[in-house]
Length: 392
Image (cartoon, rainbow, N blue to C red):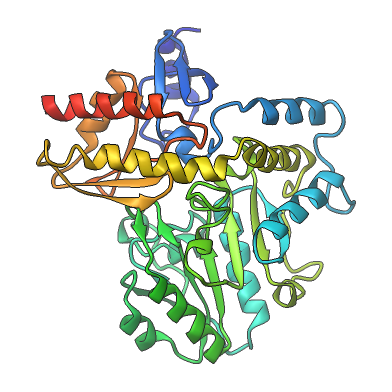
């Protein structure tokens, strides 16, 4: 099919709830995409941060092909080896918790909110989240998302949520009543503009949760599975949460989400309390196992840390040349370029030149390459970005 024929199919049969670029993608490999017209694109925002180890990593492809020929799905009435193995691998790389599997970050966060209510006393029903956060699109997680633009058209939302400025300890203390069941924040806000938490803020959450008998939930949907140079973002901050959620990069491109909770909290999630029909299916879990193995065999944690520093240095070097760049922030390969004016047009011009990046919060360019990215590819991406800024 031609590009136009595919677009016409979408126009007629697919709900237009996404602002789509007029490209039809047909192939991905590592840090590159190809569209139906044969254009090769350097992808520095692969799959909305889903393809964390690059498009179609050979190890994931091999694992998925093998699993498809054996057993794609079995319901959770039964045990399956891939789910058990993946849970073990994740637990060993975090704080030793137990896992619940689902299909997305929103589902993982929904499960975390429900579990925190089950674990805490019945009178505890309130939640605290941070302004600029993004936690999902279900009713509970869109309520937790403290950005009014995502609430439009859906009011009234669920009761019991309080929003505080990110990294504001005084505001946290002011709303932290005895009725709070949990605090949920991202170690680095992704959709909110690559805003990095302070260690003091996360440690204050930990302390107050301990004092008040509340649960500390860290949304690691974007920060988890190696992007920051560690398995999970919280590992940069000398703090241990009660629950973490993950998705995006976990399946190497295959849809999967997970919630991990400390054993004493996880024990509250008994049969009948929560479930996911497709959660933990054999195919997704086999992909998750292969993703973790690929990260370790290819030493991608260390690479993400090192290449992330290199990329940030290259991007910061453009600040003196382009007044539109205010500053660059982030950890590892989770990088935000703060602009002084809107960046949507820049993203479009970069794509025309063969570079995919993203703009969030109107003035923040998200530069989040796959963990397999090379210095040569970083140089190419920065060169294209530089040229577009020079022409703007």
